[in-house]
Length: 328
Ligand SMILES: NC(=O)c1ccc[n+]([C@@H]2O[C@H](COP(=O)([O-])OP(=O)(O)OC[C@H]3O[C@@H](n4cnc5c(N)ncnc54)[C@H](O)[C@@H]3O)[C@@H](O)[C@H]2O)c1
Image 1 (cartoon, rainbow, N blue to C red):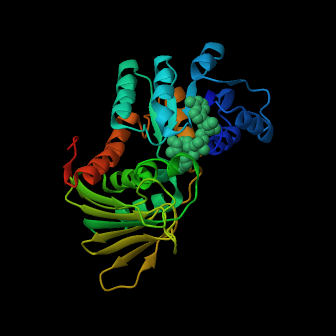
Image 2: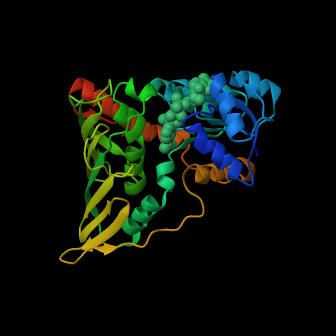
């Protein structure tokens, strides 16, 4: 499968590695607006033979590609993804689908109009601890889920766009956790309420902390507490999860999954072993969907429901009100 990667710095590194390690994918071009990054990456990955263009339009005019990997910052996702879709090139885009609800809806409309595949990298679904937790919920015998509690606390110093944007925790990071709620519960929220704030020591311009309560169509209530400027003991990137169930608890703490039946000691669940994870997993699914017609996962048509949670939460922060999901 011949690929063009747009954006090769930052998270682009994970995609360079995933494609270079894949037996079924190869690069035919890169698009990168920063010449220094383009030169450094070509040298670092020994890719000096692959042409680098300044725009996707130019790349698509010069090479034939089976797909485009979009690893630009969120505000460029719409332009890059729609350019590819309209040229008939399937897209594998980094999350979030787009930076605004309108931009995301425009991408979904372009994918529907052209009939070209657009997948979003919700790679957190395809990690061993998350797959282990999913299996424990399905097979652990703890019964019906009544409520879920999610805690996410980290203190990363990224620099760059995340420290400038509004609501960095919710818009740039928590999309993974909201998408996981839909993945675990196999349901969508009908309404939610959230509050955000920025602790006095925060190095982010936008609010780096938030608390959100979401009511899912299945009747389950989820509470989410998170901060990106925590000064103490951190959770993992996957967050800590606790499912309160009819016959006990299913929990993931520091990526270890436990079940605990009522009145019993907790039991550690054996981790699921995966042949591929994260970006490599999604790259392979993209390849199978594009070249073999395998039903695609994490399509933009599904992902808009995860991203919709993010925008509903922002609306709740700004209106100070309970927001009903437009999709409910
Ligand atoms: N799935 C994950 O776990 C995960 C983790 C980190 C970042 N991301 C996502 O990856 C995307 C990129 O984030 P990042 O941290 O790599 O950002 P970054 O700013 O570090 O890097 C973006 C790269 O794209 C280039 N670029 C910017 N605009 C461009 C354009 N219009 N055309 C071509 N190249 C362009 C930049 O020069 C840079 O090399 C974001 O959507 C982010 O949310 C996902």
